[in-house]
Amino acid sequence: MSDPAVRRVVSDIIRSPEDKREYRGLEFTNGLKAILISDPTTDKSSAALDVQ
Image (cartoon, rainbow, N blue to C red):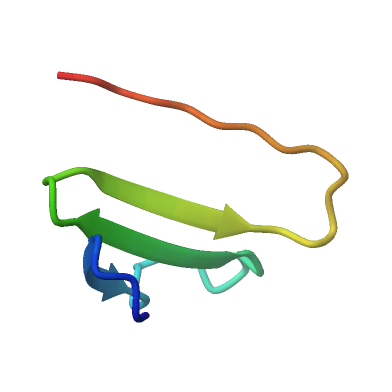
């Protein structure tokens, strides 16, 4: 990933062998951490935010 705002990309996220979705973790230079989940078999989308 070439975006300077992204400090680290994590692609080896532990999941069930039956889970066919794609996962990617991101850590940004401002400390924010995010997980992206892709499931091309669904017609729904959502987002969530947890601020501590």
